[in-house]
Image 1 (tube, one colour):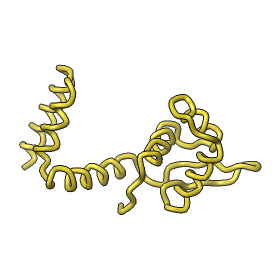
Image 2 (cartoon, helix red, strand yellow):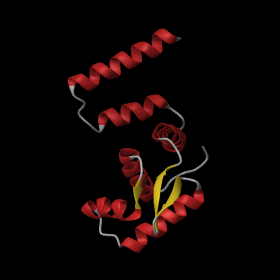
Image 3 (cartoon, one colour):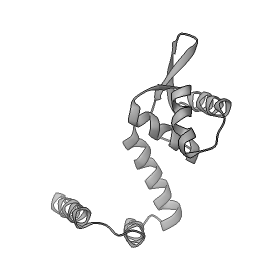
Image 4 (cartoon, helix red, strand yellow):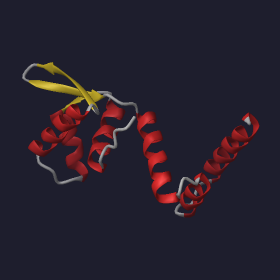
Length: 124
């Protein structure tokens, strides 16, 4: 995937990944909880996202229902690869060390990370 969604587009995609599909009004209502944005701004953004291939849509009555055209996993993988390349010189170690240093992972999260690392090591 060569598409690089903007921060606002990722926010809309996140809502649609959660719900599966929604009208512009439904997306706008959810965005309005945490963001001061106008309905027409949300509409225009979703139309642009459709034109870019980030969203699919189909007609329903006078409006459209939108759904993600790209998967959450595919998008996350692409964004992390790009971010790791640009910000950390392609080093997964530097990225992980920085990420873990910025938060306080719970014991459960540490156990999951350890299990994931063990699996990576055993698969090689």
